[in-house]
Image (tube, rainbow, N blue to C red; front, side, top):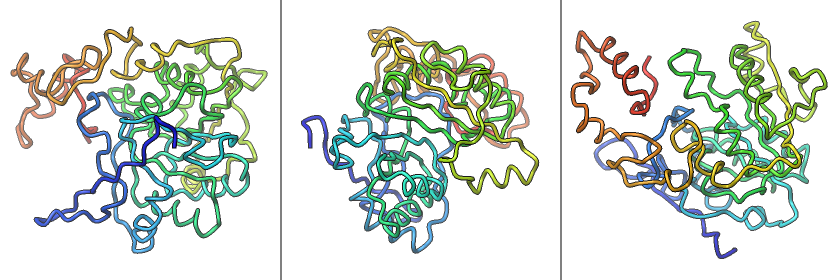
Length: 344
């Protein structure tokens, strides 16, 4: 291990019921970053789901060996993590149940795949597949990929980035939660080596249009397609179960293949702080993490600060006749103070 690399933190995942006995004491934590990182608009919904016996067994046995929590407290040495300092590593954000990830790992054993997700059943499935198929080039990360990129990965440490079928957040008021945004690209650019491939795929056409627009406008990435449009699905990306469901529904699937531009630098101060508030980059002196309940300069008011400064705009209790109207008013007046799961 390098001096900046510590063993993955083993957290207990709370279980339901009065006993609170953790189901996977050495497995993925429910909230690995805890309160030591700022509140911000998230691009994902935490998904635990029902864990089968096989998935649970894989989590218990294999998580200490091949999995780690994204706690944001230490820098990861990817060479140490994969046991090969020469192995190129690709980060995959959101892998679902892991079947496509396992297929890609098997087809390209010379590339390490660092797969990040918050879906506990999928984490168990991917670990089980890696063991059954003898895949030594897969590691599983649990938690927020933004914190992984910003706090735990070294600059220019990744040879690629894959974002397949991210949540499209179709409602207009939730578009700010979409992952592919200019500030995310600025952060990703600091962690990708020049020439590294950024590969996105989605079956939600309006999101595909936004991805293409944002990526084309980014000075850090170049489209691999001469016409500046979408790319055909490359052979290395398998047809996923989710993709097949979309095709059955008549949803067109779009792939976007961009490369990290050579000779275009992005400063660490911009990339590392670009996504702290889900907004525009700010200088490092103006962006810092704080304990829960205090205001981060860039992240905006926390729930406690919002209540102190503007108690009249607190979200009404469930069941109130004005719930919908007041919630919309709150989001309009204080958009940065909304860090709750998406409302139905």
